[in-house]
Image (cartoon, rainbow, N blue to C red):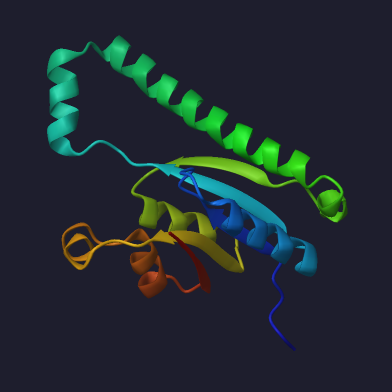
Length: 160
């Protein structure tokens, strides 16, 4: 028996030109009658940035800034997904359930792998942007990390 695809995790960076990836995710959802989790990861501040914030901004202000960042990301996610769902209302009427929206606070590659395992995801879909060779060496790639360290199949959609 072929392995079923019941849950798809779409790890989205909320940047432009991701329409084709979202279309693919929703097509897969319809074809497999699968649930969709659309996830965005907010990367934590590194130690140096965290120290700067701590030294120059009160804890109350820092908390308000974090809450505003979360609110802003949630708004962008809701706007993009609501617009997409509205534009494709008739095609998506057969969806088993509306996509779940999830914002996670962690390094993106870790958040994707952990969320996929915790939620018993059958397929991870994510975008990959083209970077220079030197950029790949210095920065690394979230998609590359997930591909090589996940036990769950990963489908990467190139974004140019």
